[in-house]
Amino acid sequence: MNHPRLTAARRAALHLGCLGALLALGACAVPVAPVQAWEKGHLAKPEMAFDNDPLRRGFLEHVYSSREAASGGAGVAGGGCGCN
Image 1 (tube, rainbow, N blue to C red):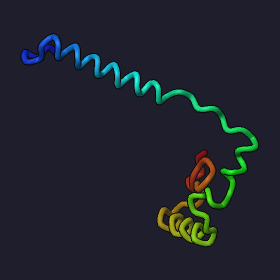
Image 2 (cartoon, rainbow, N blue to C red; image 1 turned 90 degrees about the horizontal axis):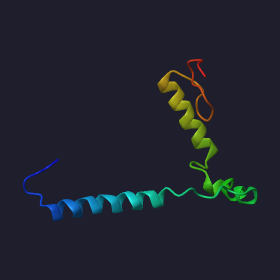
Image 3 (cartoon, rainbow, N blue to C red; image 1 turned 45 degrees about the vertical axis):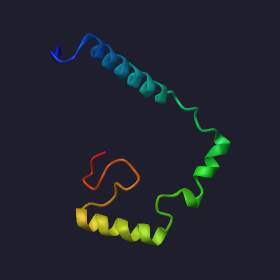
Image 4 (cartoon, rainbow, N blue to C red; image 1 turned 60 degrees about the vertical axis):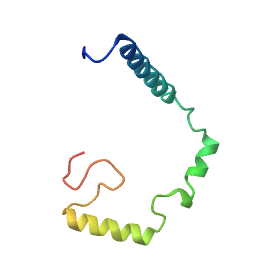
């Protein structure tokens, strides 16, 4: 887009800024090393669960399935409709 107010110097600075932003985003996309087998035990601790109260989780799943008129679909593929 050639805007009359953008001088060549401003246009170059804008392109350079966009290039810098793309390079910064590219640096963030560096693949992370996979989790080793001995490190997976830390993720399985109860403190790492989203909802570590099984009674509350069961109640909320019951309310959700009653409200949605469907059962299942909370943790496995597919829902209450029978499709997978």
